[in-house]
Length: 318
Length: 318
Image (cartoon, rainbow over all chains, first blue to last red):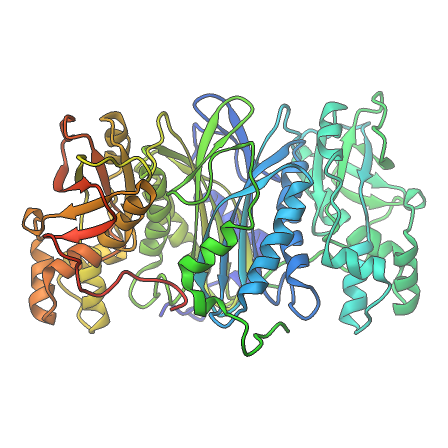
């Protein structure tokens, strides 16, 4: 069995993003890849065209809990987080594969409910499961790969100084729901439900691409963390104005009950799969998008001119 | 926590293939799917063309063991079994995604070696990793999705009475290697190595498609089990002639050492990722293909005119 030598770094030492960087360095150039690892989805050429592809691996106890969420909800969320990656490129998902591992004593009904939830979520964009694999494993594992069409992929790297920063979809709700569930609360329902089943703004991705968005990503780890990827990839700074955020009522409720600043949920709450994008200041924002800041020269994300001192976004292994 | 009611069937009760059938019944029709679940890979249409896609989920302790195989070997095998699915449709893989779950104390070097092995195997067909996901999990989980190009996909359902049955690649070697390792042997090297790293005949898939193969699949669960899928999908019977099999020397060695009929490894051994296909009797077999039988009216697989009474192929959950 391979075990770690005392001075050999483990993946826990370097963390999720450190590991991704190291793995990426091992991967060769590919003539089929129009856009490789490092954005929400890859853009792959075919003999006659191209498609988008993105993958996620969800593990019981880390990404979902069977005592918090129904099988149907878990299926919906597993689909949503992948459909969102295609959405975040300005694309529309068409086909998904589903790898499923579970212990032998899992009821068949659980798997069928999970599949139904998965298909219900896929139906929002007209996509379906096209293939899969099942295997035995100690804990439930759900591996999803989503593929889709795109006309003009919107990357993380195109933001320019002077651009407007805007978001579409829900912000802070799932994070507030997770915080409530973690403290043993089962309400407010809108927040807890948002943690169980996110509602990505599926129309907003292609809409932003059509409106000329210069950069875009989805918010899975938290606004600051994910906007940080845009800032880094684009080589720009981003200034957010906290007064422009509209705090949803359930977020305010959880904030009060738990004594956590509501802005924390807005800036660091993940799992809502909202979109954040940058647009030229000359462009008119599509309906449903809220301007929250601006792109400038420099690096990093500022909130009201200062570095935000709050809990960081989630990172695996750490 | 969802637990099984006394009379509620579990996935262990209905087994891998029962579960796949039940899940498949939940999946709706899809205008983007030229060929959906049920073959080696799905064939998906894009706005300007099409691509093949297939997925596999590999779990430590079930699909690989770190004390039997190096990280590099595990990476190669994880890639090979997916590249083989594209090969079995007559296609050529171009892009793969890699989902990776592991405990935090796993050395970084293990992951990098696994990635290198994965890329080495992909290089056989000119494919690369285009995206991925990493997460923490108790055991190592490797989720692979392979995508590729195809001109004329060869399905499982096209075999016709009168066709010749032939295979390309290695048969029985990996199964013999697995049997040897299971009994504590570390030799014969060729068999043990074949279990660790299969050598799918990557040229043979597109070659068979070009030669007009009427049906094709890869041999992951064993020749009888996988040929059974062709017989069932095509609504035909298949008669194999055991004297036409060329038993590889290492298979004969393991057979003698363990007192197992060598034919058992040839007929039921999995994990070599050879191809088996059917061709019109008028077609000339491409180089590297060995004729082993014929397609006839009826159902099921016969060996020398009889049902083969031996150990069945592997099935998960059971």
